[in-house]
Length: 226
Image 1: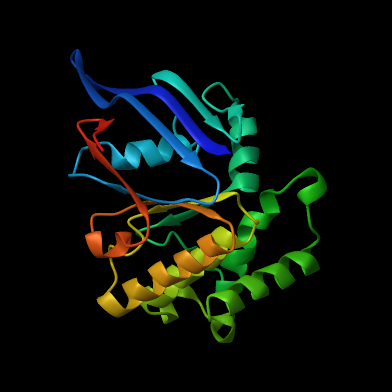
Image 2: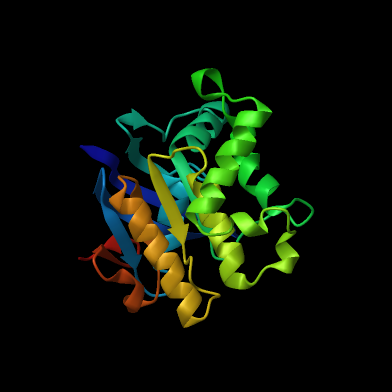
């Protein structure tokens, strides 16, 4: 089943003084449930722009984008917020952890946005956060602040946070970009384990070593060339 379906996606940025830049130029993409996709391409090719569209963090200038058969390119901001909370886990190169919160509270935080049947009380949220930290091997660090962790440990916290809402898929934007080779291998292995459990993974990367056993999509000048 198609989980992501982008049709003729354009993203145009107005730079002022009549100057426009097309980050995406009629791009088409399909991602099936259970896939591990690696998106590669040179700087400025549109990789992160595409990830932002799929994550509902930005909207296409033209074209249609469907997530789980629902058209998100015309959703309201409230609908997008709900969709992001319930269907998507995000992992960024810069970790995006809240420095004043403990590791456990950082992982628990996204669950506060859940609504309806998925909404949980605080005790259940804390239990789920602790379970996810155990999955990534950081349950012994749950009461630490992010500043007390290594870069690899902070990225593992980010993986736990991405998992906490039982997402349909994970979007990872250069998740190993700031890590040494050992920490990078740990993160990629974790993502493959998550994928083998049934969660779809869409990853932007510049490192070919991280793309083994994935389907590679190469972007150049705002279109997928292979």
